[in-house]
Length: 188
Image 1: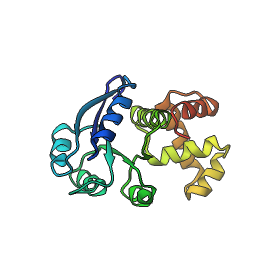
Image 2: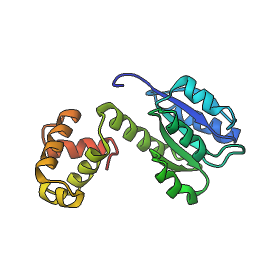
Image 3: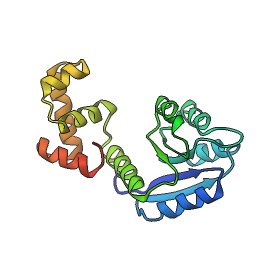
Image 4: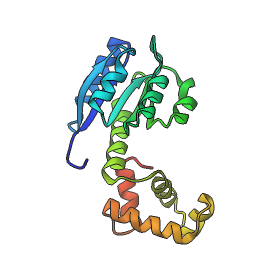
């Protein structure tokens, strides 16, 4: 995906929130809003037809909830990442369980949105796995391979193998460069 735009869909039953998100996303040249909808009934068809990289999805909508739509995306085998956008924080646990990429509260702040987009770009461009992201976060906290292995219940050798792979994927030469990369990409 390096060098290409991030195909994005916005789904929100509130037209005002939908339009605000589109205006905010227009500030990011790497984002290509390919579709938007305020209808939860037909949105799965839109998603399946366009196969976006990223979806900004309201949680509470009449008809289908954002959580139900996220489940449909997974059941159809799409690798689309979902960012839930809602006025309510009480859905956060359910969003985490549905493997949401992020959870933003309305009204969305452009700086918070920037962090989400940076993290998405860094994660997808380097194709980092969840385990590799965990290791990056622990390296940024100053943990050595032995301690990381103990915390993640893997061997030190496995951690060192992940570290080498992470450095290759991120094009970093050492831990200091990796930490700077992780901070810039909002991975930590």
